[in-house]
Amino acid sequence: MTIGVKYCGGCNPRYDRIKIVSALRREFGGHSIVVPAREGETYDVVAVVCGCGRRCAEHQNLRARCGKAVLSSEQDYELLCSLIRKYETNGGARQWIGKRFIGKGSLRRMKR
Image (cartoon, rainbow, N blue to C red; front, side, top):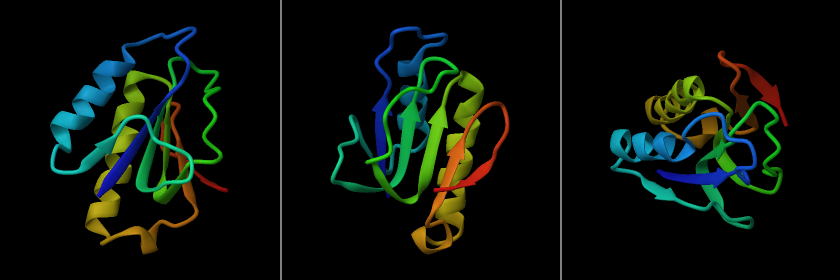
């Protein structure tokens, strides 16, 4: 599995974004984690790590087979883990194409 990570610009961080990505590397070290995620590449999962609730990081042109997780707090890390685990459990992207997950303390599905 390939996980692309995109950071916001960091103008108003409310938590340690690098700590989140370090935890991701520890927990899912067997997967390829690409920082920064690049436009034109397709990842299994994209994590958009925003420093605050504005979630202003551009990610519309980042492609993910399974889905995107847009994080804006440390609590949203579980959102990302849930997305990755569902991908692993359900056997791949076919189950999740077209889904995007946006954190705000709870897991929500949105259509593209």
